[in-house]
Length: 117
Ligand code: HEC
Image: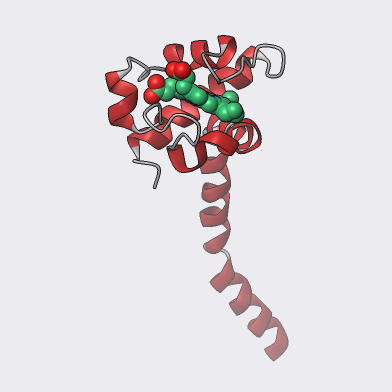
């Protein structure tokens, strides 16, 4: 009898935790584009743009101020340069489907707004 009371007590203590965990999971699911974008960025962009920099042309980095100055501070503009390439940056239209280009552009803008921290 004591054992049952003990198990019941454990159940009562752990039950409120379950909804909290479910909440965290749904938070991740709410922004799937960002995690798709993050993966694509690590795979295709970080080689040159690690931490929002630019190891090839330092002045063309992905910091918010630079993006604003170069009119690259929108998902459309970033998606366009990723699709078509520019100068020493190659085009990604044959390597990434449009929805992944949109996702990576959204990720870049999101990180730039957070100052890549
Ligand atoms: C081989 C190195 C390289 C890779 C890989 C690369 N880039 Fe670039 N990126 C550059 C260079 C060089 C420029 C400057 C182009 C120019 O204006 O001449 C640039 C410019 C940019 C700009 C404009 C920045 C500004 O301030 O004007 C954005 C946005 C950008 N890249 C995003 C990306 C994304 C997203 C990816 C991955 C899908 C990527 N780049 C992959 C080299 C690279």
